[in-house]
Amino acid sequence: MLGSTRELAVIVGTTKAELQEMLARIFETDAQALRLEWGPDQIGAWDSLGHLNLIVATEERFGVSFSTDEIASIESIGDLVARLREHGVAVDWPEAR
Image (tube, rainbow, N blue to C red):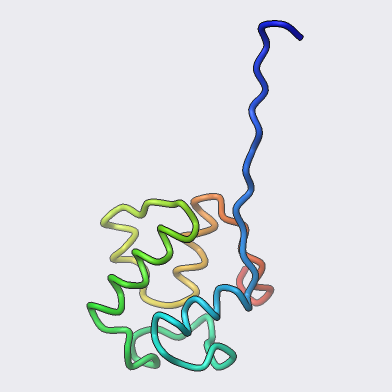
């Protein structure tokens, strides 16, 4: 149709394994060992610098931008999955509701 525009929705998503691999690279740990409830207490490299690396890598990989409050609220892998889903990223991690 002349004069009409069509928008294409780009669906960004990831699987559990892909997200685990990204986290394993950031935190230099075993991807298969990572669990949703894990955070800085279980992941030694998740210190302030590790948190910054996590946020930057996640924003770049998924094209999202977290607010300061969202960044502060990410205290576990499950929190990260929740924030990604809130930004419209389809995360296929069956254990995460």
